[in-house]
Image (cartoon, rainbow, N blue to C red; front, side, top):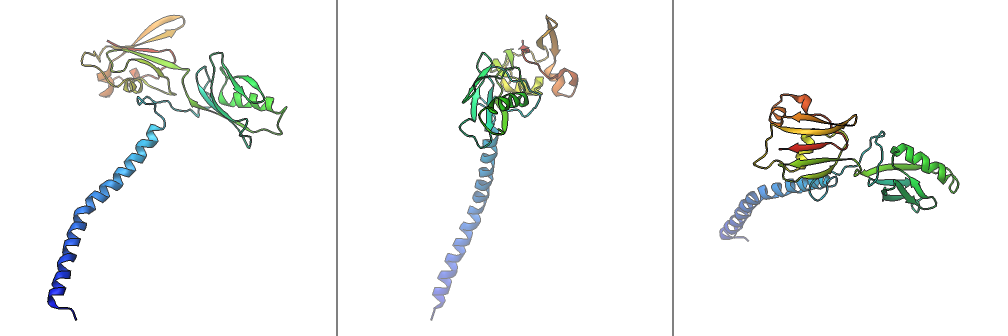
Length: 220
């Protein structure tokens, strides 16, 4: 038979256990949330390089492949022929059975069709898919008072604000009202002004234009 002392002792330890449980509950919830945040960050990191600069693939069927782009050539049920390879400076890629295949200047769909035609000599009804996994051929340049000046891949639909964000922000000496873009138009270099402060405050949205390959952003 249990004594009153036994009951009190058991009740005392049960109370202590309940207090510890209540104290540890917020940490368990925080850890669970942190795990979810890490997973999300990992998904974002999948499309960025080590400096946080986007190096996204594109599913745009009208994208034109260029030298230094990386393409994934997948032939259904033929892993020996499938490859993920960069486009060489001469615009070619090398594939088993086919040797050199010209890729630069073609869309992913056009390249897949060309590979399909040539594989018909060796395979029965080959099914080819081409995906651009890294865009390196089309670049823009960011110069001047930014934290990371240099050349950056031009992503589809990239705007001025998006491009400036890849450069890590401005230095303390930047004149953000007097930024401009140098663009080659009809053989002439044209200067397009960009007032960062006005654009981010909602004014002059037309200045936040979509960039083109070869554009140079200057932050004085």
